[in-house]
Length: 177
Image (cartoon, rainbow, N blue to C red; front, side, top):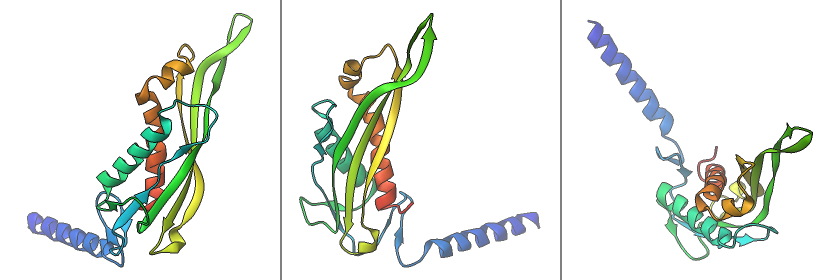
């Protein structure tokens, strides 16, 4: 008898989940909420307008951005005039002390922080209410012994920070979080 009640509860939960996931928009377990008539996305090359940063930053950020959207949606990437359109620029790349500690009588950095900020313009040609233009920012902490030059020459260090920005833009634009 307990087994039958258990099956009934599971069936009801499954039914309620199915009903809650149905609606006007398309939901996928990848976390997107994209209308069925949205088929394409265009992502322009990001410009590096910051005064610092490695020379590869803009190109790497653009490619990682495109890859993330292609991996996590069924949208077709087109060179321009997509149903969804993204453009932007890297506006800040700052490396500064984040934690000061005293060594004897001298104040020095215990941790350095790299902060990257990107301004994003997102246009949804099918639902203009979802358009936005805003900055997104993320940072990473590094030991004081690690120089900005060594961080810049290690693309994985910078990529951890830019991946956070890409995820935030994805969530705002197509996941509607």
